[in-house]
Image (cartoon, rainbow, N blue to C red; front, side, top):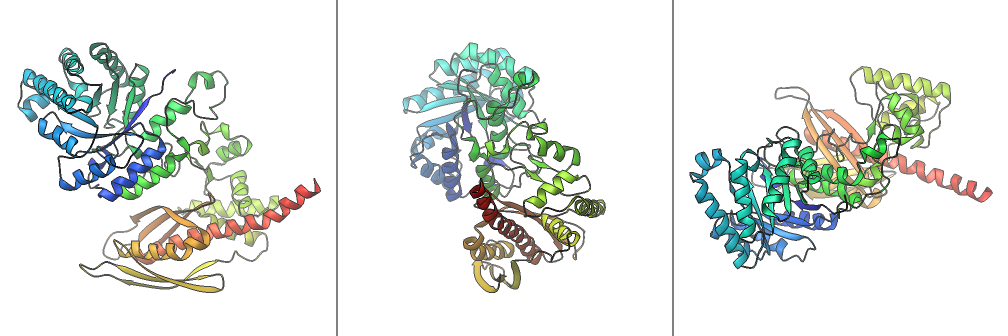
Length: 526
């Protein structure tokens, strides 16, 4: 492309407008620091005029000395612009709606009044020493001639950048591309695009806008935001950095490194995704591109066979480039190669007849509708190979939870790790949180694990409903384990799922230690 695309992250503003999501000032500060480390060019820290807490959070981020430009949102009023200055910000993103439906039914203003308000806000912000990005809200549903006039006037008033918001996700890629060209010609300043995902086109519209000349993309981590969300940072960045369809279509290979289209440190994308998911309490859908649980997971025997031979057969992106690892799932669609690769990770090498027997049992369990965990596969393998089942290194000895209205929940957990017992007490926002915090306190220093993902679903209805808990546990060495538990008690079921995940990691690490002397001996002989 010959130019770097400016990544304007609005997770802390538009992302926080996700229904039932609210970040504390401390959480906002932590996310802002992570975004800065990721390499975003601009961070929209919030809307400081809306509340005292929001003003506090934005002020703290403004004073944090981040490398990114820190913006605050402001309506086209002097009061809102003053709040930006009072928060210590140097940049403002100011907006006013320009579509006829907004002008008539929301603002009750004429086109001339809207134009005047836009000009006054930009001029006033510049007089107060701010860098200005101006948005015509609902731009994609606005009259094109009027829209060009508004953007031209905003630029003449001093706007440093103008942004095209697809406020209701109503645009198509072709429409967005044409709009970008028109606005760029009218305003003659850098153009941004801000796309919502109501029709699932936010990423496509963003890329089309950039291809047509937009210099900046407004995005959120995990695509969170109003209604169906915003263009996802991870999708837009990965597409800009790694997609090269002209080359691959002619027999070329996918890119082995970022092309440098942005300043994003792509290997940190997954960690930032996990942070935002945890703090927003919004689970990333499993089939989400780039950061979803299944984005680099393979079960089908046909696919795993290809992946084992050459990962490029079924992956257009090396997962390591975005901070991920590929993994193989056992189930009814599994094949020999996938099960063999899974067992190799635990130091097991069954013979061909043993492998066939293991695969038959895996498929039978999958046919019953069950999810097959690695621990179950390893246990089946041990039985088929005539070995002792793997020892569970971590076992639950005791669980005591204390919670009542108006009191912070506490939990005491005692675990047997190997031949020794370890106990810990922790508090949390709920009994599950407290219990898992206590487990983390015990095993964190032993296995260096963390709970990377947690989800709960009701399996049956009624007051005696069964719950299904699925977790992902990771360690500092990059090992990851997925575990599932079903039960009546949400706390016990959650604790058991996490312990199962820790046991998988402990088993894998034991296999790694056993393999290390063999590798060293082989190198010595060589």
